[in-house]
View 1 (cartoon, rainbow, N blue to C red):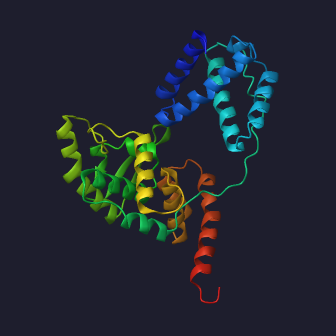
View 2: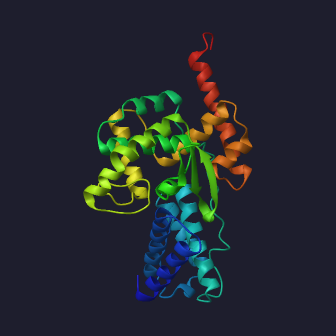
View 3: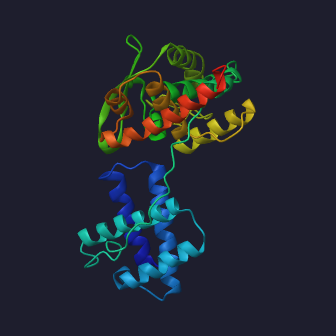
Amino acid sequence: MNKEQNAFLNLFIEYLKIEKNCSPYTIDVYKKDIQQFFLFMSKQLLGHVKEVSAQDVRIFLTELFNEELARKSIARKISSLRSFYRFLARENIVESNPFAVVSIPKLESRLPDFFYEEELQHIFRSCDTTSMLGKRNVAILELLYATGIRVGECTKIEMKDIDFSISTLLVKGKGKKERYVPFGSFAHTALESYIENSRSKLMDKNKTNHPFLFVNYKGGPLTENGVRDILNRMMESSATKGKIHPHKLRHSFATHLLANGADMRTVQELLGHAFLSSTQIYTHVTSDYLKKTYMSFHPRA
């Protein structure tokens, strides 16, 4: 990556941070996808971003397929680069967007991955609730499942965003949109225990001072990658098969609400989806969920 390319990438990152309010995780994904394309440009002897043609993009797409990447990964990379070139065109750095004419490969139809209720109960039962970090970890797990919030929304929570009197959380979502989400008694208890017995002690011990709810072992604000690492370690200690990630808890939240009779509009509001179509996929998930539950427990299934 030459100096000019690096300057364009830094401009785009600033745009993602300030104007699009993207999470650090999302920005990191964009950055890696664009850097990969810069390597491709170097191999093709393309020195400037405006030298890239639609034909070059098709060659790049062929290379991605030859690497046998998942269609979802390829689609994401093309989408990242399309956004990058749209930004360059807006800034008059390039005249046109060569990625605008390339179609994103059709994705395989996959249902969201989620936990069954008994799986979650096993994870909760295996949690350490005695240590300071254990109390924090349980509070994170309880809150993610209780509210269905995204990991980026979780790390942005400040102390003033929680109203314990009515068990409600102010969530700062995508595009700076805010919504209120209720949480139940288990999350309420876990949060109070963490705040009273862990958060202040970790911050006092390390002489830190900030408004964020969740802190790392040094008392600083917890990052998105920090949350993912915590969940993975909790999963390992529970000896539960499969993988865990924040979005799997979000999927579980939506699936369990709909399976137990919640209406879709309410779930849409709780998830912070702009469109109902984003929520409708969970109707397919709940059908699978109910069928498996029936097959497991009906005496004549």
